[in-house]
Image 1 (cartoon, helix red, strand yellow):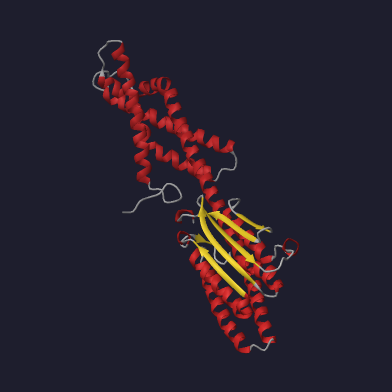
Image 2 (cartoon, helix red, strand yellow; image 1 turned 135 degrees about the vertical axis):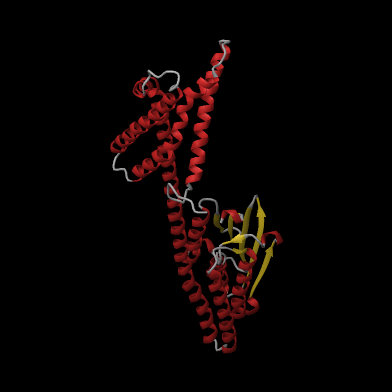
Length: 367
């Protein structure tokens, strides 16, 4: 079924007519009830037909309402200033009042045609102008005010939705830039590790690491196509990443994962954990003659996902002096801020040599 529209967004005409007609019928019913109640409290017999006929003018607004709304919407959309817009509404309101009074005059003229032949249409019309003008003016102003308020609300909502879409696109663009910056940084550190093997003439091991790095980069490209992945996928990626370093350092580097089962399906931003693990390796393990242990833990507390990366080395390093937030960790902080606002935590505790990340668990409806 084809429907006509009276506003942008494909608003169907039949729906507007149904709503406006229902409102006018409600006003008509309330007015008739008020008149009947007046006769009841005064204990007088109510002239039902005369009451209905006298209030029937309210229903004359039903056919004129779509016309009023159409022009109100059109002028509101192209208004240059409020004064010009108000004058236009006043002119069309006068036309609407003339139409309603003319329609009611016809009703009364034909109703009294047989009983009062001396009353002409002109007499009835001018009498109604003095009797009905104020009540119709109030009804017309009420309808126009409601229409303008509805249009203003619709416009403000569209502006809010447009602003939200722009903000969302801006955040996505920023996240894309941050991820693009992280990839060369990640690749540079990996190639640096491979170059160390080549310098040591451990060519077979270097080839193995290159193959694993190729698989890791392929998986990283697949992750780039997603905005969110499960923590299990992120942990699997980190395991492969640490495996490359373990091949280079041998038994000197060990790692352990303590991941609660209930956290595995929690959604997280892809590759957010890799810079944190890398930071522990670069600033703690490698300066310690490539000896150390990395412990990654994940658990849920107070509807937040808590992840900690702890590095354990044999000698005491002045980590709090050497430690600085590089590009990888800085980009991770910016990414988390873009996604969670102020509802996240990323901090390093130099006493226990642990980097902790905390952010709320997201539902599917939040994405």
